[in-house]
Amino acid sequence: MKYQLENFNGSYDFRCGFHHGWHMEKHIHEYCELLYCQKGTAYVFINGRKIRLPEGYLVWISQNCIHQYRCENADVICAVFSHDFIPLYFEETKGARPVPRAVDVAELSPILDSFPGLDKSNRLLISGYLNLICARVLEQSELEKTDNSDGILYQKVVAYLAEHFREDISLKSLAKMFGYNEKYLSHCLHSLTGLHFSKLLALYRVEQAKKCLAEGRGNIAQIAVDCGFSALNTFNRSFRELTGLTPSVYKKTASQF
Image 1 (cartoon, rainbow, N blue to C red):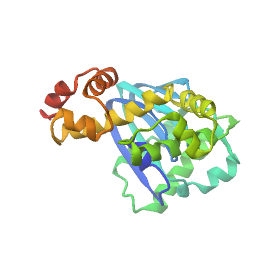
Image 2: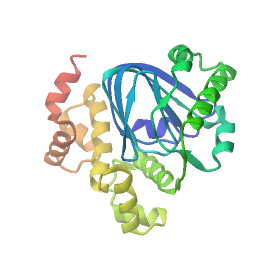
Image 3: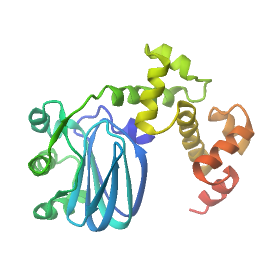
Image 4: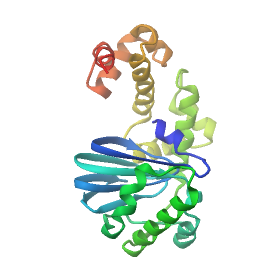
């Protein structure tokens, strides 16, 4: 879940990378993002929509959209960036967003191929490139009205979990803290992530535990406690359900890299 916290509230923030055979689980963040397929075929899932992304096409991911990637048979370039690079895009869309689809950007391939090597400090060049891409996306896409309130709520929940995941957190206490009806909060989180709150909390805790195990921070029992699990058997069960491995096997595997 680190992307929810990294890609948030920045100023002229731009990150880009090349990936081969990439697999990215569901995540959501405040920034916009694009995925460009250089070679092969990638599959993108945005708010429940499945998009086939062939070579020479990109998909635009608007802010606060749940998305994941399956690029096992593709070479892709992924860029994520703060909104101050593309203010005209937001003026043009007026609170709406492009319906997710594969967009033909073959003419812009030299620009997109250069993205991973761009210097983040070259804001004018990055802004120019991104605006060219925005124009192409809007030419080929319909707009749909959207309510970002659920995505913003999710951001608030993730930020709270980042600070308090070691504590005894319940959906009831969280709803009361944020001033929401418990049933409404549960529905929003499930519709965005496909997970009930208890599973979402376990997922966050397991993500923290994976880092601790990989870095060799203490024994498994201590890591379980440090990551908010009240019992070792609960930790072991949750870890295996979410990763397919036991903590001990994961720790041994991670130490080999």
